[in-house]
Length: 335
Image 1 (cartoon, helix red, strand yellow):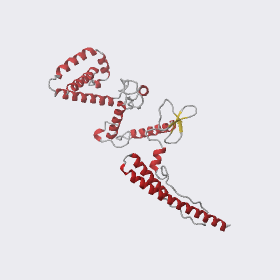
Image 2 (cartoon, helix red, strand yellow):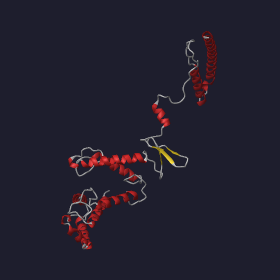
Image 3 (cartoon, rainbow, N blue to C red):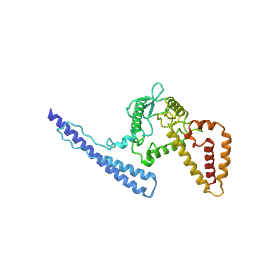
Image 4 (tube, one colour):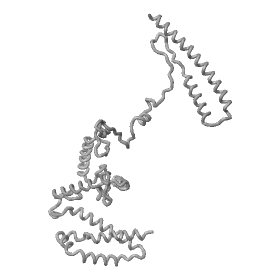
């Protein structure tokens, strides 16, 4: 039986060698014919001549592959290996480029009921898309991410002098801030980009209002948060417990002092910058507007300041409007 198999394999090999010889002769004849055609069409120029030469060279390279030398005792098939068309299995970058969608675009499909479906990048499970907004994570993974963020915020809030976002130490000269300088710059740039695109500064969603930078949903959430803080006798800004002296107020004394210092420093800057410009008298504007503000304010300001004598230095609403008017005049006069 083995002798018959070896004889069959040897006959196949002989036939294959004859076929290879015939193909080699045909190739030589084709090369001679292509050379003659190239000499005839050497005076012609254009894309057709270039394409014909490219086809001839590609056919020659495909037919020039050698046959595998196989031992007759081995029971294997014989064939010619041609060039593989398409991406290689080892080329990971090309395979990812052809199979996976870009990172900034989430792949979405539609199921039988007509509901959009996307794949979570964390658990690799499909989830339904509602309200037309596609997230990278499914609702379950998003809730887990919220819990992790909440734990991280509580941990950074407990440690004094650390950034709420990245946890690094804040410089001592910038202890009034909650975020470190890089995180503040990143947050400022992000909000500016969202504002340019017409989106909500807080959640980057659609903002229908033209007067507010924050959408209606985020404003409603913020109102609810402030109401809960007020019911719990906590400050609306730093969420710290209000003391007995601050009872009946929404903001603690530290936040009021911080706001007071900020307004006074901004007013000093505006006065210095406006006074340095020629042809602008700030004294007349200050006196006239302040007297008008004092006459129109009435007894309402006296009632609010009589309860808390430490807040006498807080600027009134008219004074704040005056500062804003001065800033507008200053920028209008600049070339």
